[in-house]
Image (tube, rainbow, N blue to C red; front, top):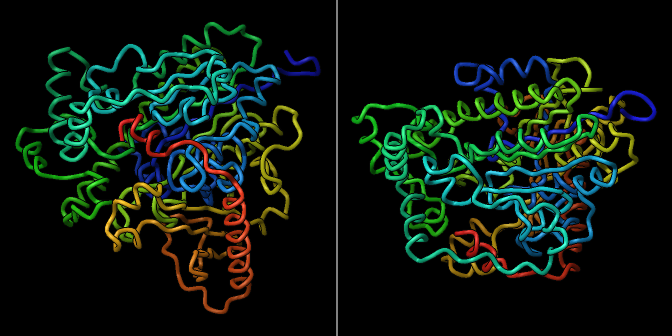
Length: 501
């Protein structure tokens, strides 16, 4: 019990990696694949104007953990893909406040080498085997708990071991021709007699691991758990791993899904391949629905659900050539910047409601800190999602794409570099979105926080449009100066190679 009243709430943040707002909303409203999420929606507040600060895993998660924009926390391609030691993290703050903290991530980027488990007392994360050979990944994570050791070792960690050439070649093949990976999992699951319903799940050890961790905690000790789910990340299983006829499976045999061959310009997806990727992506939310249900059941069995601040969100969206971009990373179009954000629990307000204003992932740490009685966290512009002040309607939020690593860009033809290696920053405020670019150009659109599926329209000379454009240019200049003054850290190439890329 808190000395001044009721027990402090537990906090659980679940990131559905690559979940974009419009597809997620459509699937939940349809409810055919997402019955549990549809019920959870009635118990949550939906922030329909949620914007991710980054377009890929590391900068977005670093913002989620620090409450800072990427140019301030420094974890991105243009400065180094490791979170520096300077910014405080939500896990560190809550740990000092008496919380037990743990991270359970299917995404291998959420690990000490990236600085993204700093502050967590326990952490475990998945690897390539768990993503591709799912029928083998049942009992325990590839990378076990480190306890608190990663905090002490931060900055002195050896490079991750480089996978063997055979494994690299196998991953490249499985990534590109997903039907081979899919078939291997289907046969393996039959041989090992795994339930077919578990086949699409990545790192299914997450829920049991989380439950075992909660059981070890004293009942009166508050808990903070972070979970990353990877089912919506490319490449995708045939029909999200659900049972299919052999004829249907064979029809997918020649489909390609490899992001890196697309980046290099060696693969131009056909209309059929793009349509099938979109369909498989939508089907992935069926597995996510099951994962979220299991996490909530873990909290209920631990008798913690009713007093839990539960946040369900994403790190970025996913594109399917809507704006000449496949998957994510390289742009800040709506398909990538707009993410789902639901909040459920103590102090949240009317369940089932929708808040149609611009909010950011940097607001999540501020919300948690405010709820547990702290004062301020992260960027000064961050606001608690529980606030209802009138000044929030005129608030601006931002998103950045930093292109790619210098080594990766150097290997590309000039036309691919021009398309993909761009530094851009978007500002959202009121009814407008403005995108500032390194060339000095700024493009302004009409944008609606209440409808992530609404197409952007030309802003014209509408009131407020120019002001948002000025905001974008001002923040772009600040970001550019901040990045220029930050020393690069570590080897991006060695990090990515160590993680199997």
